[in-house]
Amino acid sequence: EGAEVYRATGQTLEVRHAGGAYHPVSLPAGVMRFHMTRRTLTPILANDAASLFALDGDLRLVEFHSKANALTDESMQIVAAAAEDHGAGIIIHNDAQHFSAGVDLNAFRAYIEAENWDGIDGFLDRFQKAVCALKYTPVPVVGAPSGLAAGGGYEVLAHCDRLVVHTNSVMGLVEAGVGVVPGGGGIKDTFFRWHDAKGSWDDAAWQTWMNIGYGATGSSPQLSARMMYFRDGHDETVMNRDRLLPRAIEMIGEMRDGYKAPTPPVAHLADGALAAKMEDFMQQGIDRGDFFPHDKTVAMAIASVMLRGDGDGENADEAELYARERAAFIRLAKTAQTYERIRTMLDDGAAVRN
Image (cartoon, rainbow, N blue to C red; front, side, top):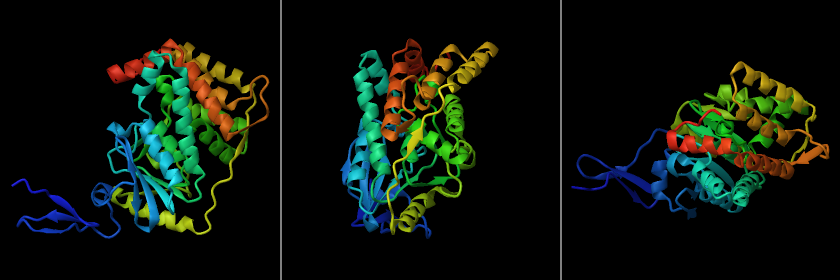
């Protein structure tokens, strides 16, 4: 007959039963599936990569919906738009298999092939400005991921006030594997989190360097907590994906009264003498056959974001740390080895070790 299975009648989603009649969709209490809810909604703003929706209670929801939810300039336009048109609170959520596999490498490949370094700087700057605006909106922001939240996908979550995470979520900063550094606040944020945990900027720099240099991911929120990507006692987990969005809505409600945006932090740059220890660690790994030469180059670029260099001041605010991330990323993007890693990842499905 070709009659559609679902239809939206106003704000109600109906499903066609065997006899041909439509009845409202019935889900258990406390359950929401956004791919169903969105059929009854018209986005405030949408493009090919992402959409911004208004939910009940003047809330906003950002949904990524590109291939593998890879993040592009278009994705981040929607994040930036949400930070402006923020309503009473923002939720970053989608119910695809994976929250986001990270930034779309095809864009970087094109920039590198064109030697368009300003293009890379502009892309990263727009990404950073979008997540920074999200962090400092005057309303609560909750990330509600499931599946993989890697690289830039995780960096979006890192700028949320709190997370409610499906127990099967994988989080981490994996950029080193393709020869670049996290360029969307990932180094900056992990550095601050490790300092909060350790109380020492030098220890924080070393731990952040180890996390990101190894491209480590936590295959569960509990394992992500060991890398500071999930904060025990602050972020939450749920067993059922269908309860992510309802719990995110509740969390906004719990934070809303008296909410104040976070105070911008300032980092004390770590002792530049750590660089020698890091170089030794990498060289020993190369000598053992555990690492490849370009791994060392990438590792030292990660370190450069957090370590005090010649002529540097003692402290760095977020804007300076973002700028350091961009500079480190571009230095690596100019190397033949990073290009080969990106090219082989895209063409062969695995980055060459070099």
